[in-house]
Length: 267
Image (tube, rainbow, N blue to C red; front, top):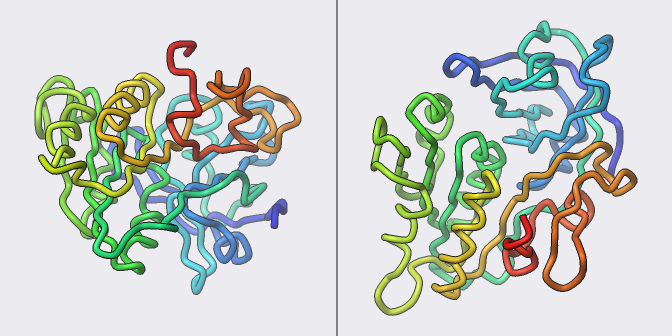
């Protein structure tokens, strides 16, 4: 049930310059959040940002009552989190949106998780759910260069399968786009290797990946990125061109959407 949770910052973990995670005590949110859902976060006492910012929940521990966010510093909103002192409070409005679905996966199914840069943020909690369901999953993690994957240690030992790294410039892992790395392995010769693909990243990555999964006829769920002002459908700031109607409202109908619902040629 959506609520405004007053959460206390317990700790911050720095992975590399500009990449960090923050963990809050938010017991009710930790119990209710599902993989792929998000919150609208506000740090009190700041003039900027003027509006709350949307953050996917990276992980949650219901027993400890903790909720984690994986963050890259890119502006005043993320800077406010990076500067927040331990013991300080933030308001977390959530859970918001829908989540990734494991329903309907056949026995012994294997799935793929494709992430572009900090688009990997919602996936630790998904890996937790996949591990609990005994569903093997491979992670395809890509970025422009090694520095953009400075948070990759967060995924060490939590992926219930193989991890494939790629960078555009070849400074880490395979050289090239993460979508190409996925495409090379996803065709098993007798149909797609994966029963489902979960993805999050920038829109150009999504557009390329949508073509790949369509060719493979592989069911997929994309965690869409869109600027959000409210998180519950009032401001219409997060609309995305759609195929079945003029647009979808990402925060209400998503953020998890099948790629076939998005009009990629209009983005």
